[in-house]
Length: 106
Image (cartoon, rainbow, N blue to C red; front, side, top):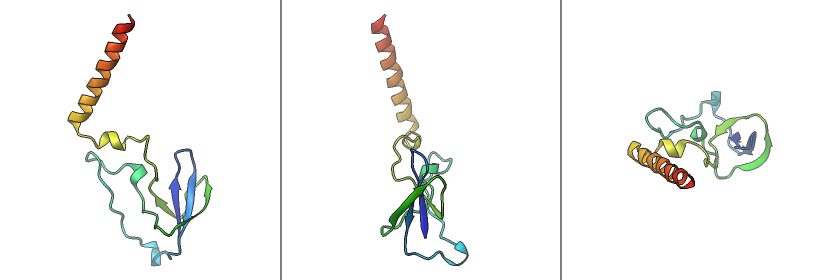
């Protein structure tokens, strides 16, 4: 089977395994982690690439089974999974720091 994993720089990396797709392509439903009650982030959706898969190329379009991103830095997943109180505290601290810096420059 072929797995496609999206790259943040664009395009997809292709991985191949010795697996054979089940009859009718009826793969099991992946278990996705829900974030903030609205569903799973798109970068986490997909089926995990098996450990024996080998990289067989890259291209502009997805082929076969879609896999989650390998590196999820730069996404909002980390922000949306934090508690509202922590998000508010982080935002207040950022606004306070900007206000202090701006005040010193005047």
